[in-house]
Each structure stands twice: as C-alpha cells, then as structure tokens.
Image (cartoon, rainbow, N blue to C red; front, side, top):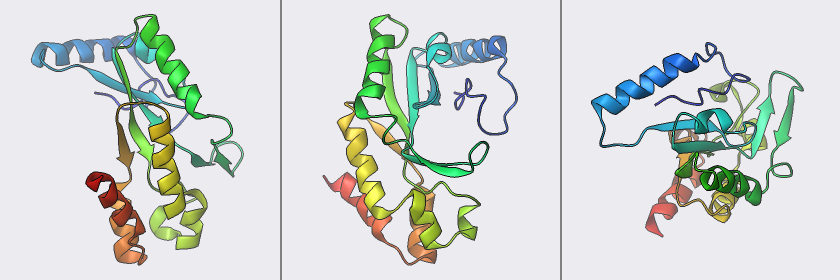
Length: 180
C-alpha cells in the first residue's frame, strides 16, 4: 500500500501524515475487503511499532551492505549488527502481542547500493556492496531467518549486469532459485 511510510530518515519523501495513511487504508479496505492490507518498513533500523499499529501485515526490507551517503560516507555492513535472530525476535514480539499477523521479507537486497547511480559505476565498484557471492549469501541469510517468503529487490539490475557488464551470474543464480 505504502512503501516504508514510517521511515523518515531515508530518501526524499514528505513527512508521514498518520491520519492520511489511516484514511488511505480504510479506503483500500472498502474497495477490496477480500485482500489484506500490507505495509512495509525497514527491517534493520526501524522498530516496526508505528506500522504494526495500522496494518496486521508487514513486509520488511533486508539489506546486508549499504552505502551511507548522509552521515558517514562509508560502506556499512549490516552483517555484524543484524544477525538472523534479530529479525525473528522482532517479528515474534509483534506477533505475540497481537499487533502483526504476518511478517515476511518484501525487499531482500539483490543489487548493489553505491556511491552514485549504478550505470555510472564500474563492475568493481558495484561489487563492493553486491557481488555474485553476496547474492548467494543474502539468499542463504534470508532463508536462515525463518520467514516463510522473501522477495528479491533488483531483478532489473541482474539483466543490466548480464547485458552491459557481461556478468550472467545474477540471472543464472535467480533461475536456480526457481528450479529448486
């Protein structure tokens, strides 16, 4: 319904107007009462408290390596800070207190996060934050969290990498996921 409406620390989005969001949700429920409403939130650096108060279904982002363009100007690996159990504990907590029914990974990092637009970066620059090995590692990590489903963020880039960078690994790895 809305992509990370409670994330105000990233991107160039207007401030959240909670009453407007609640009206949007109510409108969607009237138009389509047969389907659940889904909101998304940052898996790592958001508490999920706000989103759990307005939606029973949460899709979270899961990034393992980012470039922090606002504060440090450094690549930051989330591997040490956010282990598998971190996500599961948060999900279990909100499910136990009845604020969330479902939690899944709606945005698993499957493309680089760079210092500039990807088409301006060399393959080596892109591989700092996302390589074929990191792709496989991210998939394994997502599976180890115990969530029943996850969606990959970056499919268009896999084809760009194959066609423009001569790297078929990402498309091939993705194909293998669907063949298992």
